[in-house]
Image (tube, rainbow, N blue to C red; front, side, top):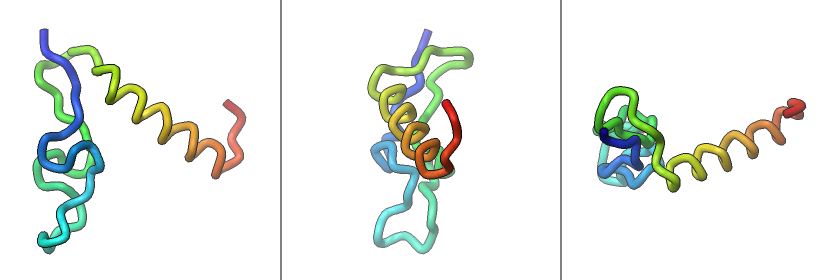
Length: 65
């Protein structure tokens, strides 16, 4: 079974490079993650990164957790 992991094209940021005319990474479409097999677990690094983003956005929006 594979895992979800940070995108190899953007290192998990979701953004295209400075030289690209695109806004989002062409490899992952801006998600920052790549699925290596259907239903695979999320890698620890990717899970921690997503949790940080969710916590930051939750705080910005003032949403109760």
